Length: 125
Image (cartoon, rainbow, N blue to C red; front, side, top):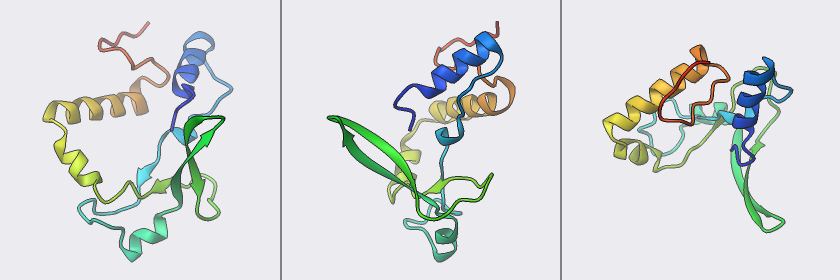
């Protein structure tokens, strides 16, 4: 979703200035399924599925957009259907990759807001 490097721009602005004029709200979209082992969303899951990923060429460049399926309330989480093979993709990750991804997510969401997480060694300046 971050084809323009928005997360990096926001991180740099926050590091340099303490804040950023840009928002990260579109950087995170979760799967709508309550049980990821279901191949397809259930009727209950459908109630929460509020966005879709749509690909298009823009001036010859492939882009992915998040398009709403209905009106979205303020502070409502964006939930999409990742696809029927998402569970398989998850199961193919190694234990180390899952642990590293979870650590990055936890740190990014709570402790290190705005710190550049693209490097293998993380330091707080």
